[in-house]
Length: 255
Ligand code: SF4
Image 1 (cartoon, rainbow, N blue to C red):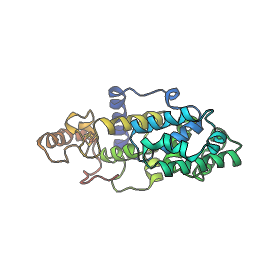
Image 2 (image 1 turned 180 degrees about the vertical axis):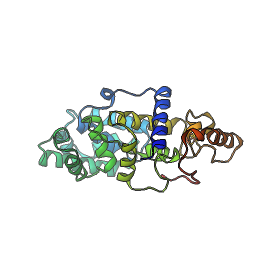
Image 3 (image 1 turned 60 degrees about the vertical axis):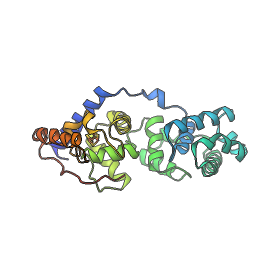
């Protein structure tokens, strides 16, 4: 890994830590089964609707266990999830995954704490509704395993910041690249802070480059039309000598 890239990556993290506050592990972790179901609900859904749907489901299903969810009527789960969209599909996935966890794992996801990391990941990936991002969120948030989950915000901002090649689409390649740039103790902070950056400044359609705290470190600043963004790009170009050689400027965004 180029040392200039490592230096820039660390500088980016430092600025983000100074800009945003991040929740503690205890605020986002907890029962892995709850985290799993919440993550399934969150797929293609805004955070506010995910929260509402999950809270409704929690109120409806007590105790919130794989056994109880597996026997809950579809229409009751659908009713709770309606606000999150794709509620019929999500209900079917939630029922299936609950039954599998009940039958194959005795109703527990304890293996995420004890199995070697890759083995635990493989086992999670065999569950319906669990892709690499969901598996990594469970491993990091609940078991504090050293993985850096890549969601849509982390993917977008890490490419715009030139930390990951713009054309890279393979989940594991993006994850490995970012994991190589940061210390394992910072994976949680990087995940949370890149999401905060993506929601606040580095928005998908209209990034607010001229207000972004990373403007001077970002090769994509000012790539959009508009005078303020062009100005942002000049700020980066005048600052880049500190970090040369740097990644080439990118022309387009990918998600
Ligand atoms: S300067 Fe613009 S493109 Fe770069 S991280 Fe900030 S908002 Fe995103």
